[in-house]
Length: 176
Image (cartoon, rainbow, N blue to C red; front, side, top):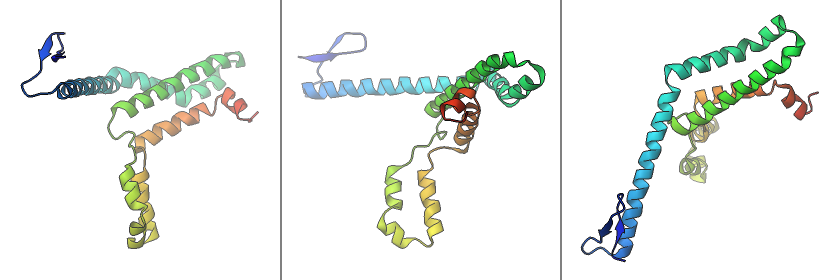
């Protein structure tokens, strides 16, 4: 083994004084950096797509349907159209879940992951003994445990409230 391959498939000789293991590690590091760059580029593209006027308009129409579709069904349609509205509601819920998933992946701060080190610090006996009040300690604990932004919870609860109104969900969990 006298080197590694570059991006064009050409063999690169080892740099002077570089061992085979160092050469492989450098190649792995470069590969990891390009993978990270590609991932960040994909996240930016998805974020741009989600923030586009077309996507916002489309999701706004779905939101209007989610808010008023059931009322329109009851007022203006015969019961034999219920299955159509149920299917539309399922599609709307799917779009909302896809949007939440994509936002969790590409938006910084949308789904905050708890800092385990900070949780350990807050839950230590030292922090408990140094607390000024239990309420202050609990609020500090809540800050480090909080896994999502306000909009994450708003989106998740509103989507879940739509799903639990579907007949198959009610039947599944014994509501009738």
